Image 1 (tube, one colour):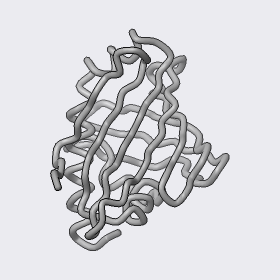
Image 2 (tube, helix red, strand yellow):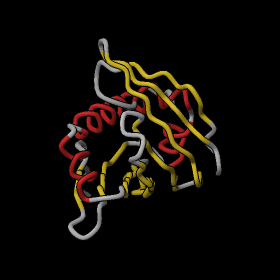
Image 3 (cartoon, one colour):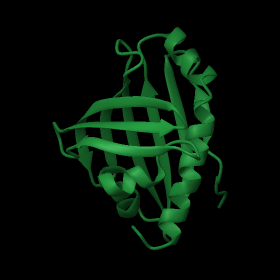
Image 4 (cartoon, one colour):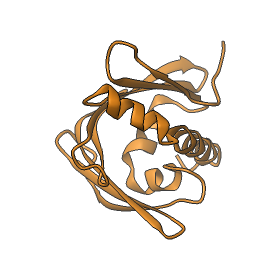
Length: 160
């Protein structure tokens, strides 16, 4: 079985969607906890050198979330709503507060690969190809890959 330690990030050619795929040495339940427990989420999200503070976190169907990431002298706020939190799937909105008109609909799916491994499939649907391409140019792959590497360490140390 092929495993992916770097995230694969692809842009759909027909729709303004970004798809991210990444394998983890974890069960679907562990990945769900890492994405829904605010203390765990704050430990791994974002690029290296970033500190994350959770302002609001209600991980349930209809709940909302907001966090602030700080790096050096810069601060970035993000917010959204949980539309569905299920055993193997999360559907939520995602907004960067610096671009309040841009809202993505994100779907995270946890595919059980067996032997304690799970493949994360993340899909972000944005409102235009221009917005999608701006996300891709933003350096998002650094935050995604750094964050997932931190998540690997959180999973390996038994925190989850």
